[in-house]
Every structure is written in C-alpha cells, then in structure tokens.
Length: 230
Image (tube, rainbow, N blue to C red; front, side, top):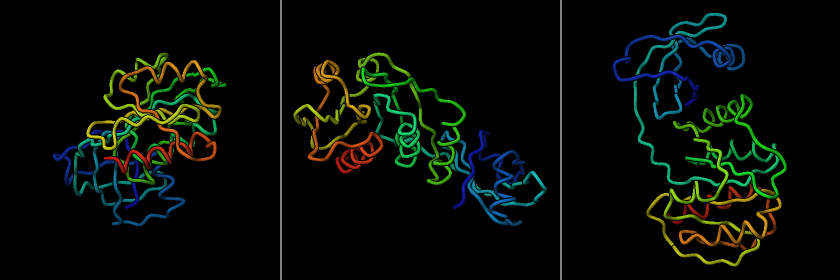
C-alpha cells in the first residue's frame, strides 16, 4: 500500500476521526501521484504506528484523511550496524538500504581511514523517509555517534566483524539475540583497529570469499548472512 511518513501520534481513539496532511507529502500525492478521493493510504510515524486512512477531501495543497484502522507494531528488529564512516554517497546508500532491510541502530564511528565526518542532516532524513515509504517500514533508524568500539560492542552478546583482512573465527552458527554487524569504510579498518575489534570476547570474525566490496554492498551481503542465521 502507498505510504506516507507523518510525525504524529495516532492511537485507537483516533479511528473514525479526520486529520490533515500538508507539506511535501501532500503535494506529492496531489500533483505527482494524482491521488483520488476515497483512495486509501498507510500512515507511518517511524515509531511503530501504522494507520490506514481514507482520502475524504482534496485541496490544492492539503489532504483530509479519515482514520480507518490503527496498529502499534512491536519492534522486532534484531540487527544493528557498527559503521566505520564511508564516503558521503556510500553512506546515503547505506541509510536507504538499512531502512529497507530493517536495521535497528547504526553506530557512526570515524575510523582511521574515514575521510569526512557525517551529519544526520535534512538530506539524510529525506533519504530515510523515502526508504520508509517505499518499504512500509514502521520504524526509523536510531543513529548514535560513538568514539570507541566499547560504546557499542558492550550492548550486544553477538558482534560479527565482517573483515577484509582478518581470518574467520565464527563462534555462533545461529543467533538467538540481537546481532551487531561491524563494517568498515572503503579501505577497511586499520591494522590497529582490526586488532582492537577482534580482542573483544563477544566478537566473531567473518572473512567471506569475495572481492573487495563497497560499504553498501558489504551491508547487503552481511545482512543476508545474519538474517539466514536467525
């Protein structure tokens, strides 16, 4: 179903009530999609709320929506990402893919080979919104800036380091708890960083028999590996 992200709290008491949608989302539906009266769309708020609404009135720049149903989805996401910051375009691809895959948390770490800092700015928010709408994902990603591995690694019993250089040492074939994937920038982590990462007792190292991959490609491959291990 066609979806729209709306930063608004809706609950079961709103069923049957009307609300107004304006701004870019409304203009896109009106001018580009040419949505019609009585069509239904899905409202998402990024916090697990999913509401089916019906178009009851169309103005030039606004839509009036009647709430038909409401659901609060339990957050069952089990994969998070520790990311050595890549280039800007690669990071934007990762945000989009992470939303579509259903990544819960992204820990942003400026590694030895990271070239530039990354800000979660309006452009990144728009990219994530587009991915949420495309995939009907009811949850936004949680972004955290970290300066050490410990800040993120200590939160997980299963950390999987997808390494270009270290030898594989998989400690778990199946994962019962949440998993933190560790992916470096295009040049990977430095030798010193590799040593630190692999020194944690909860870290499994995986070196796949592939060519060197860009960070977004590594995310896709790593996520597929983890998903089949649940």
